[in-house]
Length: 214
Image 1 (tube, rainbow, N blue to C red):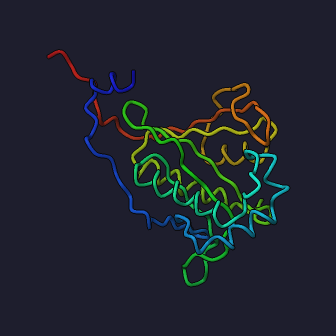
Image 2: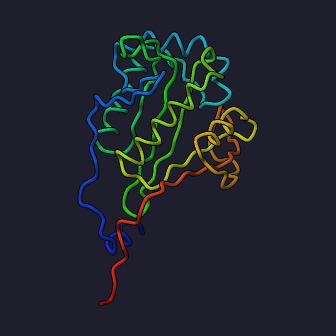
């Protein structure tokens, strides 16, 4: 259906293709694609925050912290990035030398759709020790700017569990609006769970007008 409708719109033949070494830099955090050398830091942050993270994530497999599992994630992230399907970043504290320091979390723009949709879905996690400091708000703002300004998407969506007050507060700070409620939306921590749905739309002049009959 979408491919049929897209034929009536004058969409650009090519969309931006940011390089894999793209970095998003804020006052306190740096975001970049993961590398195999990040595994130990990633494992440490995930392991130390396991009890904190598991209620909000899909069930962790037995090898969830293994090097092979991490490298598998990276290969999928690299493939999706090259194909323009998703953009995955690790979040680091910004060091005094303006280089990536301590790994504190991750944030993704998933399920990127072009054509008449022009949207993606935001997902994120952060180590428990770094919560409550505004760091994810900064990282989320960087990714939203990347989505709207670099990728030229029109819309970002997100979902969170109804009792995840921290995530709801984060999305509000990022300018998302609550848009709906989906029952048994995603399988989280081994159970199909309801989600609150959120959306944020780019504010820009309309650039692709509908065709006329003239």
